[in-house]
Image 1 (cartoon, rainbow, N blue to C red):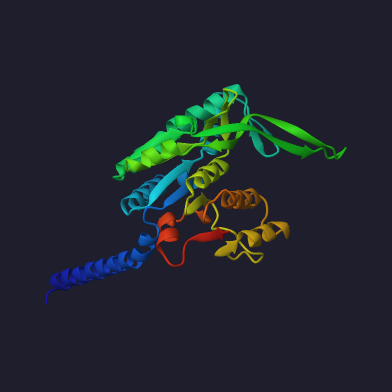
Image 2: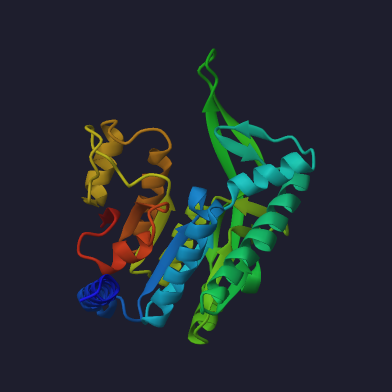
Length: 308
């Protein structure tokens, strides 16, 4: 046998092995696909995964695959870094109080332009390019979400007196009407939603994307809410990933200081979503390729699952 022929045979064997492995993977995923058939899965998409072209394309393919396999995905996205970049470009200075961006009228106009405009349409185009059919929405469409003005309190370090901080046009979801999402999904379209919402006062509010996703997932009675973050999930004191937690266990980890810093509001948002009626919330690393599929369609999952 010539070297060329041997090389061709080897190449064919490799391809066959790869094909068999793929078939095995699809076969192993089938029970999970059936478990999520016609179930609503809300995915909060943001962070660094959003800025990476390769990861963005993989995310769009995964969301398209979910919809094709019978799941009813809803995407809610953030865009903090992109908003910051646009404000810098326009020379609008941002002030932060209680860890949140104070949003004046000029800022909220930029927020809406970036979130409901550029970013929203980018995600819609990526899903459409992957073979899906996505529709871009915001909380304003069909009066989907009404927000109320958010307030935060900070303690003065000298007097120890608590003061209410005015964050301007920063809102929190107060009322959710999922009718427009139901309509979009019944037409076999994928809703991609920007967290901008009107208030009953006629103003426009910038809503934290995590809180917005939680409120949407609760109103839809979602089977899963996935938070794609920049970390693997909730870690124990030795830095090891905790695969599953009950709501009570998650609260205990906040109380005993295991959950720290930026992870505290994440876990608190998960707990709030569960109280709103979501069956399970997952914190997972959005920079892991195909994180959404690994979480939903494999035995070992991909992050930390928090259940009631």
